Structure formats: C-alpha cells, structure tokens
Image (cartoon, rainbow, N blue to C red):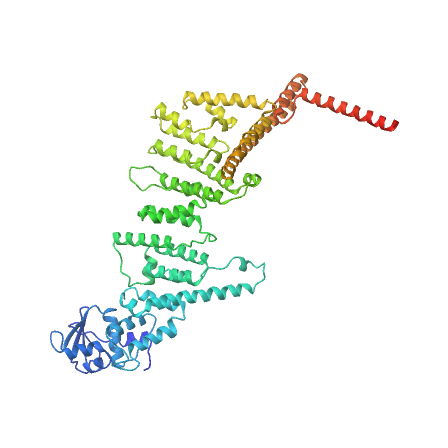
Length: 605
C-alpha cells in the first residue's frame, strides 16, 4: 500500500451530501449507514467487515434501527478519525503522520482492526510507525503526546502515552550526553564549558498538557536529567502557561477554550504541579525571582496550603539573599493589611529553624570557629533585612500591633548589632498609629535595646516626643553610661574578665550544656565586639573633627592644648592612664639598675 501525504488527503476529501451523509465512493451505491457523533457515513459492508471485528459483529447481530443502519458511540477521534479508518479499509492511500497516528491507533482499537481479521491491519501499521519512527525522536514523541489529549482513556489503555513519555525522557538523556561530550571537546577555559546552553527541547515541552508534562518531568528525573535543566523547563513552562493561553492555543488549536472559572482552576493545578516537580537536590539552585513569582501566583490563586508552605520553605533556605522588594508581597484579602505579613513571618520562622538545625549538627567545640560561623553572618543580614521590611510596612494603617510586635520578637537579640533600624521602624509605626494607648506604646518601645543605639539615634530618641517618658529616660541613662564607659580605663578588661569568670562553673555541667553555654557566651562576645567597633568608628569620626578644629585654630595655643587633651581623654579606653605609665617607667628603671648590678658582680667574680 503506497502512502500519500496529508495534502493528498485534503485533495481527495469526499463530498458531503445535502443530508449530511458522507460517501466514500459516490459512483457505487452504499448498503450500510454508520453514524458517528451525529455525522452519517454511507458505506459498503464488505470492506468494513473484512478488517473490523466490531462492525462484523454488529452486522452479524443485526443491531441498530435496521440491518443497514448503525451508530458508533464514544468513538475516539470523532468523525475525522473514523473517515481515515474507513479509507484504510477501502485500501485508499494516505500517509500516517505524527498528527494522526494516535487517532488511528485508538480507532483501530475501538473497531478491533487486529491481525485476526487481516494481515497488516490498522493496529499493526500504527504500532510499527510508533515504534520505528515516533519513539526514536523527541520532537515527534512530543507531537504525538499532544495529539493524545482528547483520546483518553483509550490512549492510556493501548500504551501510547507511556511510550511517548518514556521516549521523550530517553531522547532527552541522549541529548544531554551528546551535549556534554561535545563540550568536552572545547578548551578547559572555554566559556561554553562553564555556561552550557539551554536545552532545545525545553520549549517543545511547553506545548504539553500539565498532566502529561508532569509525567515527562518525573520520567526525566528517573533517567538522570540534570536538575538545572529541569528547573529551566519548569520556568519556561510557567511563563508559557501562566502568562496567557495564546501560546497553548497556538500549539494545539483544537484545545477547547476554558471558562474563567475553569481557567482559574486549571492555572491552580499548573502552579501546584510545578511546585511539586521542583528538584529536592540541595545543590540545585532555583532562582529566587522564580520562587517569589510562583509564591505570588499561589497566594493570588489561593492554592492549597502545602504548595505555599513548600515555596516559603525554599525561600527561607536562602533568606539572606532576598531583597526588600521581594518581601513586599501584596495581601489579597479585602479590608486586610496592604502586605502579607503572615507569609514573611512563616519564612522567618523556617529560616531560624534552619539556622538552629545547622548549629546542632555542628559537633565541634572550637570557639574561634563559632565566632566566624557563616550562620551568624546570615543572621545579621536577615536582621537588617527585617528591620528594613518593618520600616516599609509600618505606615500601613491596618497593620495590627500584635503582628508588628511578633515580627520584632521572633529575631534573637544577637541578630542585631545595633538597633537603629528597629528604632526607625518603631518611630514610623508610632507616627502612623497615633491612637495607640500608652501601654501599647510602652510595649513596642520596650523591644528596643537603648544600649545598642548609635550616638545619632540616641540623640534623635532623646528629642522624640512620640516616645513614652520611660523610653526617653532609658535612652538618657544609657547615654550617660556610655559616656562613663568611654572614659573608663578598665572597661574592656573588666568585661572580658567577667565573661571568663562566668564560665568557671561550667565545668560541672554536662558537655552538651557546657557547649551550649559557651556558644551563648560567644554570641554575646561577638555582639559586644561589634558594638565596640561601631563605637570606635564614632570616636574616629570625632577625632577627625577635632583635627579639623585644631588646624583652623592653630594660632591659639590654649585651644590647641585643650582640644588635644580632650582627644587623648576620649580614646583613653584603648590606652593606659598617666599614673600607670609612670609606674611602668619606674619599674623598667629598677629592672635596668638591677641588671647592671648583676653584670658588675659577675665581672668581679
């Protein structure tokens, strides 16, 4: 049988009669009428019963309105697929292609066109095309899988979808292997080796329906496709399917248009499926922009809670890399806050749990290593990020005090070196919520550590009328205490000795409790060191200002000496007192004279 092209099929399409009846041979009178989905076909019994077991049984049993009229219910592929099967029965030439092979295979199964009735029947011919041509090509397998969308469950029963899914996964693995070997041909310093190109099949997979796409990605993961290629495919599929239906209609024009409600449910299914397909390998880095985009879609479409929690968990794992704009997620509930604070709060909880788990996994006892722990650096970054986030959401008139306080309290004390950012956020919140009671103001201001405020923030807080009186008193008290400590000689040594003495009794504790206590003390030490660095920078600034004043008033000797003495007094925390210097000088002289005496005595001997 010589196969013809699709153009030949269109050219030899049969004329339709006025009574909506199709004739295959118009010059020979038909003796049987078969109706398929409301369309009638005037045919001949002999060529049909010679290849179709179902039609042979129907004619033999005499089913239908009469012996010459029959109806085929739920025929896969509809009248178009049945017409191709009839042409095959009549021996007419046409070409089997990726566009019609799935329909022909399902129609052949429905009509029981097996080898039992005729050799090289329709089922055998379509199976040969699928096994020898389609399965060995990724592009053809995708095209056949797209054509199977309206053929369920027959396409599943005959195994077309499984064969296409496995064929796509296997061919993708071959492409990955070939591309990897080709990159090895380049020089080691070649940029092509470091930056592999995007897989070409990623765009082809975007034409699949979401259930078929899910099966393909799962098969690819089992076959060993790189996780970064899977992530790139997920991103491309999300962009193609969630930004509009125009592309999907282009790939498959026969796909029915969905109603607004059905379209929303379809998009919810897409979002939930794509999130479930994200690789779990920790070495695979998913772009944060994609994760936040999917999270916003999940919140807007009200997907299931498991989908949103998974996205929040993945973002929290790299929360220190998130920008402030990413966290400003709009709230979708009417009459609620402007931003979704609950989502950010859950992400922060996940982040702190991750930090705690990583610290518990560390079984070392090296305090120096703990001081340089990357977890503490990440925690400081997140602390600054959350303070900036609080300042952004503070003007929201619908933001309750409970949620604002909860966002502040969740971070530990050692997550903030200075509380200037927190003070700024609280000040904005008090300004935007003037109806707060005095007790509520005290509650939110109590969260600010006045000892961790910079000189500039302390000066601002001392003059801030929005703060409660007790807050102003605390600021002034710690400012005086800071000034006293700055002129104290032994403040640094006293603090260190105090910390060392606090660990003397730790030997009686268990090793685990002792280690936890040491970690807490190390955190406090790091925090104190950071504060001292900030204070040092402030003193250096003041010293530079004094130098400028001395240069401008160099003609006045009294002013110069006064400024110099003040500068020396302010940096006295890092030096010794004049009396102590004299004592050290006298000791050195006495040691020198003692050495001379010993040398003289030894010479006499």
